[in-house]
Amino acid sequence: MNKKVIIALDFAHGAQARQAVAGLPAAVFFKVGLQGFLEYGEEIVSALKKKEKKLFLDLKFHDIPNTVYGAVNSALKYDPDFLTIHLAGGRTMAQKALEAASRRPGLTILGVTILTSLADSDLLQVGMAPPAADRVLQLVEMGVAAGVKGFVCSPQEIAPLRRRFGNEIILVTPGIRPQWSEKDDQKRIFTPQMAVEAGSDYLVIGRPVTQAPDPAAALARIVSELSAAGK
Ligand code: C5P
Image 1: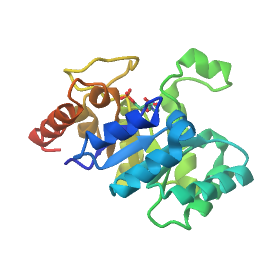
Image 2: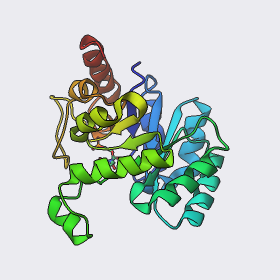
Image 3: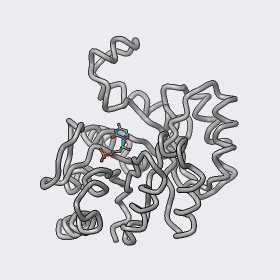
Image 4: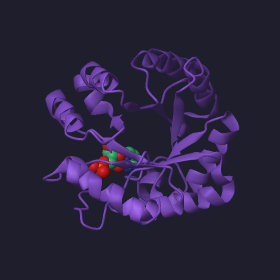
C-alpha cells in the first residue's frame, strides 16, 4: 500500500465512515474533518485506532493563541498523527499550537495556507492581496519561522514551495483527481502522479475512492498507477 495516500472520510453518518474504513483494508491513513468529528468523532477515532490506522484530524484551529493551545492540548486525547491549524491565526498562535503538540512526539501540526475555495476576488474581500500563490508563500515563510513542519496547500503551489524550502517541509495536498474519476466540485486538480511528481508528500483523496462503485478497487488502481510511475 502506498503510504502517501490519505483517505478523506467525509460522511454524514458514523456508520458510513466505519463502513468505508472496513471496505478499505489497504488504506493506512484517514482524514476526519469538522463534520465527521462533530457528528461521530469518538466513534470513528476509536474504530481507526482499533485497526491501527493513522489519523489526520482536520479541525483547522484558528483562534487566539491561548485558546488554540488549549484546543491542541484537548485534541491530544484522540492521538492524531496530523492536526491542522490555520496559519492566518498568526505566528504566536502557531507557536502555541506547536508547544501543546510537543507533548505528543508523533504528532505533526499542519498549517493550512489559503483555502483553495477562495478566488482572488474573495481574498480582496478579506483584506488579502492576490495572487493566492504569493500569500501561500508568505504564510509558509511565517509558519517555517514559527517552527511548523507541515503544510496543506493546493498541488499547484507545490513547485514554488519546493523551490523556496526544498524538502525541509512536508506538503499535504487535496484537490487530487485520477484521470478516470469525476471532478466533483474540485476545480484546480492534479492527478495523483502529477502531484507526487511535483513534490507532494501526502495526497488527500476523498470521493474518487469513497464514492466509487468499488472503493477498494479505485484505491488499488490509484496505488498501482503511482507505483507504475515509480512513486
Ligand atoms: O472528495 P475530495 O477528494 O474532493 O476530498 C478532499 C478533501 O480535502 C475534503 O475533505 C476537503 O474538505 C479537503 N480539502 C480540500 N481543499 C482544501 C482543503 C481541504 O479539498 N483546500
